[in-house]
Length: 345
Image (cartoon, rainbow, N blue to C red; front, side, top):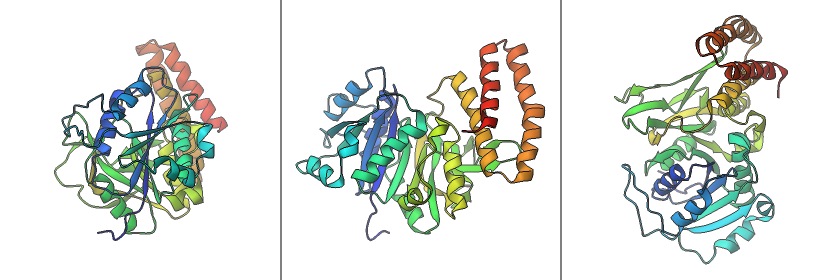
């Protein structure tokens, strides 16, 4: 057990998803970890997200979930609202002044002026946390997740057990099938085929993965990162916008000796696939996979990938969109993603 509890800043990104976000927050404010703070970054939502989040913090919007019972004792939650410009001037001393009269939970809400995607949106939250909240760890947590009360303690215990554990992932179940694994923390990269293999994907949890496992990457749905890693390799690459940025971050860290590991006693539930339009997904998945393979694969693996992807996979998917689906728009997204991937960020 820990003698001192390292401080963790939890970064949650919201875009037009306040219902999911509020359920995530309610589970997070009930965890059994004494030293953490929450930063909610809103990526310029166009719905009623901000109003709903304010109502939740005031105790006016109750949350129903099969995973927990709504608490009234920790309401109201003190809400600190910031613009992108505001956070540039919030030092740790200034932050201490803002919360000195509060004995309740605090929510730091950053309202972005545009939808910057997953990478840059999270980076804004990370930069604020490092500048104002003085964390030892940063935790990226998807807004469409629900967490177990012990999840953060177990992740920190795993990270503290080895100085080279730079990234830690959680056992992740499907929200709608709460004993079926979406992934055991993350997975490995098949550089020759440009795909990721999630460990234990779509597997009934029968205890086979109740061990600590080192892997190529930790999934961005729940990713704990040591501050020293960010000091060494930087934040997420904002060029990625969405998809593969977590893989790229972990592989970059690995080049500096920081390993990715699965913490099997930490548990969350994920509403898998709750975001992103399919056209965006086709473009960014294909563009960013090429970014990552070009950056991190060995030379022979990269050449193999080029032959496989442009000699087979691209043609196969193109024919599917043009002949079977008759969807020229998705075909264009596929081709543009591939060409932009070759050009590089």
